[in-house]
Amino acid sequence: MLKRCVLAAGFVSLFISTGGADTVQLKDKNSVVGTILAEKHDQIIVDIGYTVLTIPRNQIAKISKANSTERGTKAPAFESPQPQPLIAKVPGSATPPTVPTPNAAAAATFYTAPNQSMPQRSVRELVNQIGEAVVQVRTPSGLGSGLIINEDGFLMTNFHVIEGETQISVEVYHQKNGMLDRVTYKNVHIIAMNKFQDLALLKIDDKDAPKFKYVLMGSSDALSVGERVFAVGSPLGLERTVTEGILSTKTRQLGGELYLQTTTQINPGNSGGPLFNMAGDVVGITNMKITFGEGLGFAIPVESVKFFIDHRDCFAYSNDNPSNPYRYLAPPSRARNYTPDERIE
Image 1 (cartoon, rainbow, N blue to C red):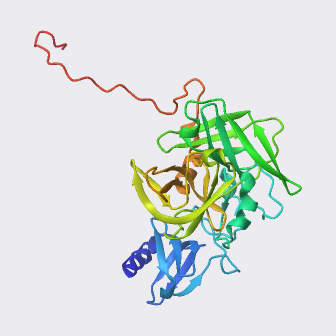
Image 2 (cartoon, rainbow, N blue to C red):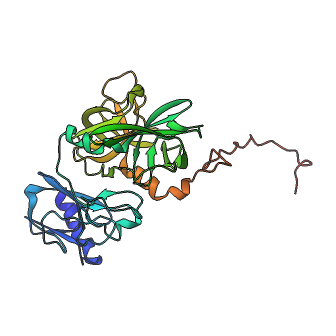
Image 3 (tube, rainbow, N blue to C red):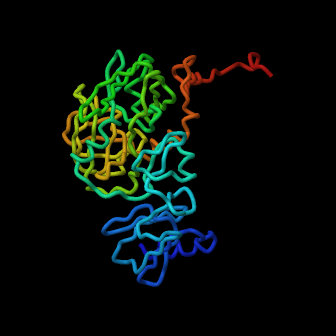
């Protein structure tokens, strides 16, 4: 099966410019030309333009990377590979001290994404690093969780967390001198929302708001079933709760939408919070569980979240029409049988 895919990839590469692309030389003398998205101990994942291939390590003879002097440097899949820094940074924001200067292509995005696989670490280490970026979202009717996606105070949560509400507050735990300082921001606006995908984009607009710590938006496509993941959120209002599990499947279809299924404990209040891989990158947004079972939690894949953010103008919220951006039309009534004299010519 792999050989057939490789031959097809080689054929297509005749019609696509290979300048600046990575090349994977196989032991059967075929080669795959594309962009390497992820490297694991037993396989690599390559984007060849029209599809993504998973190639076992034991079938690879050599890997040649374009414009790279260090093995392991990757370029984002949305442009021709070029020398890339470790992190693609959000536009208009200062570069963190430990992060290299962002590339031009990544600056066109609204969130931060790693350009290459990061080493796996323990949950304890990661929670200390990303804790400030996970917040609690409160409304008069309930509460949920959220994740800050850039330093300007934009954050993601579930639509059902803020559905029917405009009075929204966000609690953030800032780390100061080794201590946690809980701050509540009450000037929070809805920027965009999508009821059908259960996603909402909010912004903290308090005048005294600082620059916020934010999460990195990873890739759920690069995950393998059985890999460890963990969630951070506020189940039943218990803020900063961490739960760990594994990825059960990446292809669970519920209600016409695709979800990540995980054994990570998801409870009311976790909704809108992030699901992380062991590198500390967001791979999904938790939004529901099966109540009559254990270890049956679900998360929206981060690819769907990034698509929503990239097209946020299409889902822009309007105060004049809180149900925006969709409107249900009344179904047509059953056709009436008119007599010849009643028909309008």
